[in-house]
Length: 170
Image 1 (spheres, rainbow, N blue to C red):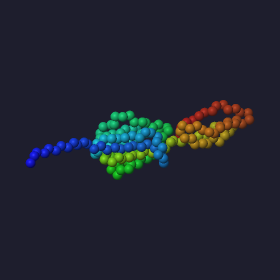
Image 2: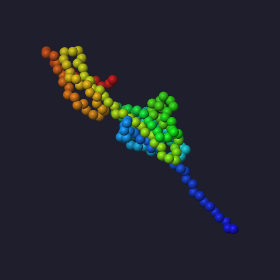
Image 3: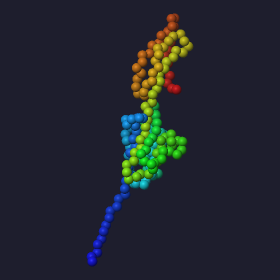
Image 4: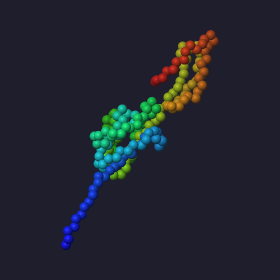
């Protein structure tokens, strides 16, 4: 009867969350995927890339890497989906508006998908004060694209175009 010795090596299991950022209704990325990798059982919190709280937390520590920031003039956050039941989407009004997702890292890969719309702007024209016409230029244009309409200003007889003003806003 001899003496036997057994040894075992243990390592902490890690979990991964993949965060996607897609154009609404597609799998067209608007930003690079992000990965949260940490010890199984560790909590995490993530928000969309437009919000003022554009951060990822693992436990209570802010993730050190810089996140991409989406231009709110170009994109509008729409919704967030997750594939795990052990995650929650916000509990306060602000968290829901930011798409804040909190959860616990699991052994299997988890996925969170944020969806964004490309903002669209309506171009219109009007003659202030009468005495002329402007061609119908009503058109909706996606952010970053140019209008395709030709604009014609036609003053009434005896008048001339004094100035053309561009107004941007709501």
